[in-house]
Image (cartoon, rainbow over all chains, first blue to last red; front, side):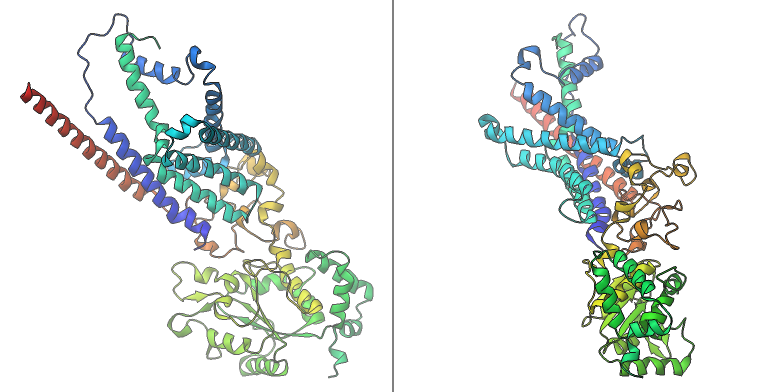
Length: 219
Length: 357
C-alpha cells in the first residue's frame, strides 16, 4: 500500500469516523442541554424567537457601524478566506466528486482555473490573518496552541491542494496523498478545536438572538 | 561464427538495410528516448557496432498480452528487434523449439553468453506453497528465474505483472504472486509496466542498452524516465476540459461526445505515468482516452486494488457507510450522555439551592 492508497483508504475512513463521532458528540451534548426558561413576558412587538435568531445570525456577519473602521481589516479578510474556502471546497470538481461519493449530493463545478485562483487568494488571506495574530500584542497574548493548530489545519489543505495542482515539490500522486492526509487531519481536529464554530456559530448566535429579541434589543 | 558477423551493422547490411533507413530508425529511437538530436549519430554508431544481443525471454504468470502487444505493434516492432538487433534465444510463444529442446536452447544461450545476456520477463512469480502454481518443464517459476538471472547482465520486467505483481497479485492474491524485483536483488532490473506495456518503451530500452551499454535513466519505480516521466494527464489532449471544469457524466452523454474530460468517470490519468497520451498505440492512431474510456492506471503498482476503475480519483476507496453509521450512533450517544450528566448536575445544584433557601 503506497501513500496515496493509505490516504484514500484507511486514513480517510478513520478521519471521517472521528469527525462524525466528535461533531455529533459536541452537537448533541450542546443541543440536549436544558434550556434556561425566561419567565418574563416578551417585550411588546418582539419578533418570534426563530425570526430573532435568524436575524442576528445574519446581522453578525458584519460589524456595527461604530466598529466598522476598527475592525475593517478583520472583517474584509475574514470574508475573503471564508468565501474563498467555500468556493474551493464546494466549487472544484474533484471535491464535488468526493462529496458525491460520500453523500450522493452533487452540483455543477466551477472552472478549475478559477478555483485555483481563488485558492491562491484564500491562502494569502490565511497567511495575513496569521501574521496579524503574531504581530498584534493582544491577539498574541490571547492565542494558545489550539488557535495555531486550527490555522494550520485550515491552511494545509489549501496549500497542499495548490501544490498538487501546480506539481511543485514532489510527484503529483505524493502531493495528492499529502493533500488528502491534510484533509484527514482537518477532519480529526475539527470537532475538538475552534473550527467547530463552523457549525456552532449558528446555535450560539441564534441563542443570543432569541434572548435579545425577547427583551426587545435592537440588533 | 566470427566476431565481425555478430555486429548489428554488418547484419543490417547483409539484410539490405540502407544506411539512410538505419539512421532514420535511430533518429526515431533517439526521439522516443527523449534524447537530444545530437545523440542520434552516437546512438546509430553504438548500435551498428553492438554485438547482436542474446535475450532470454521468460513467461510466468501472464496472459501473453505483453508479447501480443509487442509483436503486433508498428515500427519499431519486436520483429525489428529480433531480426536486426537481438538474438531471441528463448520465448515460449515465438520459438520453434519445444519441450526439452527449448530448455536446452535456453541453457546453451546462458552458457555461451554468460554475464552478457539480457533476461526479459513477463508475468509475475507465484511464491505460495513452494511456487507450485506455475511450473515450466517441471521447474517452478521461482527456480527458473533464479537459474536464468544468475549470469545475466540485466533483467527487464515487461508488463505490470512482472514489474509490480499485476493482476495475479490482486487481492486476495491466492498464489502469493510477486514482482520480479522482489526476487531479483543482485542484478539491475528495469520495469516496463503496462497492461500491456507500450512497445516503444520495450524497444527503446533495449536499443539504449545496446547502443550505450548502460540502462536508460530510471524513475523511483525503475521505469525508464523517457517513457514514464510524465503522467497521462500531463499530456492528455482532453486536459483543457479538466481545467475548464467540463466533465463527461456518462460514456454516452453530450460531454463524452464532445471529448470532455473523463475524470468523473474514473480516469486515473493524473496519477498514471506512461507514454500512451504522447506516443499512442497502433502506430500513433489512438489511446484509451481518445477512444472514449478513462485511463485505468495499468502501469502503476497495485492498480487493480486502488478502488473501482470507474470511481473518481478524489473519492475514497473504502466503504465508509458502515463506519460512519457506527460513529454517528456513538457520537449521539456520547452527546446524550454528556447532556444527561449536565442535567443531573444542574438538578443537584437546584436541589441544594432549594434546601439552603
